[in-house]
Length: 300
Image (cartoon, rainbow, N blue to C red; front, side, top):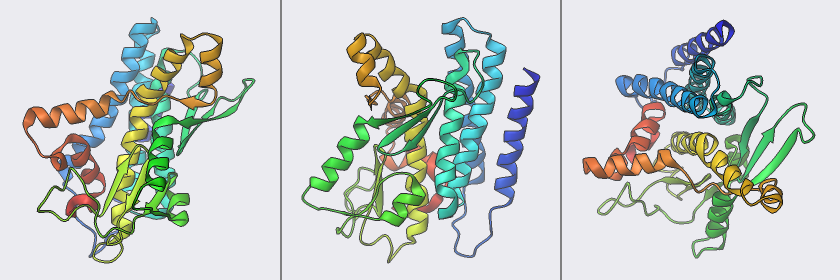
């Protein structure tokens, strides 16, 4: 227990160091500091709540789950902070660290080591790493991400794959020939968004690298990718495994290859909370959180 608390404290320190080390730039958009701090804390709260809830259901020690949740939430915040530096060199690491944090929080209902079962996203795949088991590495296809990618590549406005951005992001990044992209967060008379994320796939418009800084845009959309990953690992993947497990041998066989990542409760909360407030889509929880870490999306 004490060791877990020390690890959580170390993660908090790491967040602070990354915040302090962000390079100054005359062109860098200023973040809302109060919102930034709130969402750093919110990720810790999400990790802690998920861990404790799983421990209560499973009947495992709550104190240990609490410490794991604090650690996992802190790692999720640190991962988002890395993405928020807007540096392409830290984008992939930030996504994977977010995933490691979510995995730690998700595993709180068992007494196995912290990193005994980690899922890493390389969209449209989820790579499950379980050292010491008969299948230490298993790659599973995200149904939602695969469907989104297939839809975009076969649609009327066929985008091209930006392989460089894809490699440093950890997810497909496509360049659309359209000048702006239709978006609920930027309705008329707005011309549209510079870029969009949906189900683990990022698309940026032909204008994103001309009248706007593409690096900022991709950092902001990568924050949405991290949000998708957080919800998938905490909720969608466990729900998929549980649902397929009820189908017996056939279901277990299917779960070795695909993830039915339909259940995204945090996204439902995001949509519902915005509707209850009567807020426009761009002022939803997810959008505010993404701008708190990477304000490049503020000029959609």
